[in-house]
Length: 289
Length: 318
Image: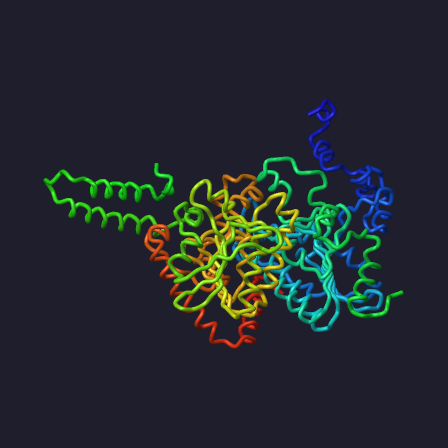
């Protein structure tokens, strides 16, 4: 405790610790994690969380991403009522049930995967996006179910499917239920493939573990966002296993492109145009305006 | 302490040693050695049954990794009249952590794929402790496609701590290799029977574990993450692996109860490593039964049933 805190009343101390009354409104300014520039948050948001100065891609909320992708006013959220249960009555330092409730409160989402349908430059499209803020974007039964339904819907309507991954992997708290979402999602994608409906996977920062090792790598086209961490094992686990420092840029999108795992890297601000062009080609449609 | 026995197996080890000692004693004719040996054998049986009656999930995890546990090639050796190992992914290398080939079981032609661990230091390293790299999964895929081309049923044996987390594995697309197998196995046009015989370590296990039937040996485990990995993330300490093993619900009876696997195959008293031959014979009988069942199904029905099974896994509310 410093001298100032010592002379404060306990009440004033408690207040100052929680930020007090007269604090500056939070979140108006944001420091760019890439170049350190101080950015005006509403402007950063308009720019899809990409730094206008250095093009660093900051995390973007799943909802904002999907809204920015579709034609304005065309979206309809799908299966918004799907919620996780706690089949194992899992408990670590916290009960899984409590964790879910806390996450739902802090993110405003029911689970880590959002699904929507709408139009992309007038072409019908089904899209999913992971919310990384929800338990690290981890995929459990809800994520697997939503993704499989999205693939089945895309199949039925012959509408292309896109998924934006942002996930550390499968959700531990649902045990083997989670693991089996990998085979579930992949089985649904196999049917989409048979139907000849295109699927593009966009891997954003980070895309690791079972999400990358199932729906993430199964795109007819796999796209990475600049500098995104993409891989199976996380870099910490690899470092512990091989006991050496990893090369610079290891597991970044650029590294994966070089090693033949990705088709291309696309700036988030150009994603909508790029996806519309690629899908139009695969669907044998004229080029969208 | 004998390293081939786990700590809770020590009483078994002690009795075992005593029996061996007696059997090799030629003198001491004052009493009947045979009687004494039989008495000890009976005691050993009771003691083993006693220890194995109430195993914790953590003890079962240790059993699934037991150094004397039979591995894929041990099962193949007992079950097959004939087996021809096929090597290589035709792209990069042959990964010794996954073995596969053509075989004959009770006259029936099959393709078999399984994880393979080593017994001694040298073979353990060569087999990379049963942790495959992408080339292992791509070899497996090549053999699956071979099975499909010649309409041979596919049997897989799962026993891996997980896919190898290494620099080269990442460079060569570990995620892609696993994902590709999940997709292809979902639609492989032959019956597929998967059996977890040891450790079912996450995506590295599932990558050869998608099929029409999933069996688990009584003391095998199947989990989204190892108890140690889970503990170090959620409890911030690998020491809490015991608790994680409990929470993850990774044992065969529990997973059967949750509807995530089809069958638990009982192990001989004291575990598969006490009588590998009996274990292999029992497993073989189950597999032959399941192959008969699946062979009787028309292909479209088989694939639809497989899709429904894969699609049906999950616990959520709406």
